[in-house]
Image (cartoon, rainbow, N blue to C red; front, side, top):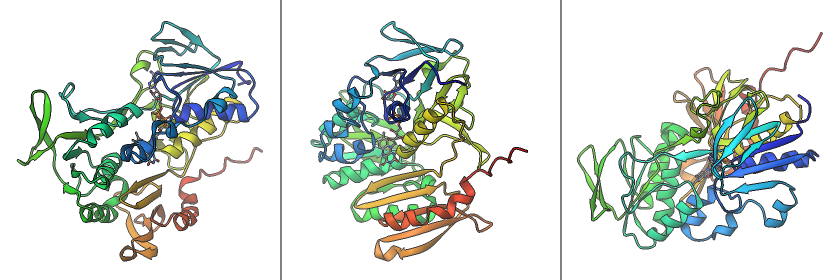
Length: 398
Ligand SMILES: Cc1cc2nc3c(=O)[nH]c(=O)nc-3n(C[C@H](O)[C@H](O)[C@H](O)COP(=O)(O)OP(=O)(O)OC[C@H]3O[C@@H](n4cnc5c(N)ncnc54)[C@H](O)[C@@H]3O)c2cc1C
């Protein structure tokens, strides 16, 4: 494809903004339009469950760029307007305000919607955390709340529980796993995380499911567990996963299967690309499709999409990476721990409270590396994963 005469990016989060910035950095001078449903300047989400909930950062500090930097991108920002439909053949997007915006290349970067506990809309004191507005609402109630129940033992639930506990609140973390973040960390390390939470006074309710909430005058008063326990709560934060924001793409003709399905170039159709949390791309080295929900992926995938829009034709085959900060511990994970991988401490030690762990597959090959308060050292072990995550070079042309 020749360099397109215009680019339209839908979704003004980290991935959408990175596409715009990468295009301009690479010298693209044509028209760019960025549509975003939220009204304010693009902002970063990781601080929402950490510094913003804790009150150490105000909203402005989460902004990804200053107004001057955004202005210098020479991009039309259509904010506070929701994309309602895409015509893939003409690459035209219809928005809530009635605008019809078309371009020669379109990037879908609409991220995720937080999943909600069924039947709870309208219950006061029950929240999800995805946006800056959500964070402000939860923080406001956290300052008053005496007993918080966090439903969901994934990364987000564990982070919210950790932050609320550091604020001095009585916190219970419930979820179906044996330990928080077991799906991301594997059994051994998740048990250490459980111990960390317990040491700090977070009450864990592993292997449990929520049955119903109890309310008085429309406000939550307790969480009733399927197993029989009733946990008093004046604030409930539900972190039970997310769904890709692809509802508006129904009928577009694009393949939607837990995300926008793309090839290894992050291309969903001719001239249409996806980046960030919403994109399900084919990872050539792993030989399967992946969708990554992490901050580093949003930027790296966006950069690759910008390169491919400009004709580079590169596959996206990252070593997945995420971090989380909980109760004074920074955990970083490179690669994807598999359920059967065995964990070996290769630097530091669990009793020292800082270590690097390697996850080995049944054939002894490394599948992931984890750092526990050892960021530099963990990064030093990342290269062991190159073999697993780097596609074989294409056969040289004859
Ligand atoms: C609370 C929280 C904490 C996190 N902490 C970490 C962490 O510690 N480490 C880590 O690696 N990752 C973390 N993440 C994940 C990381 O923030 C995401 O992976 C990243 O934000 C994804 O960027 P994105 O641009 O793909 O999506 P988003 O940031 O969700 O941006 C998508 C944008 O598209 C907009 N949009 C959606 N639908 C439409 C539509 N139809 N029309 C127009 N606009 C639309 C949305 O309003 C949104 O602004 C965290 C996420 C959250 C929510």
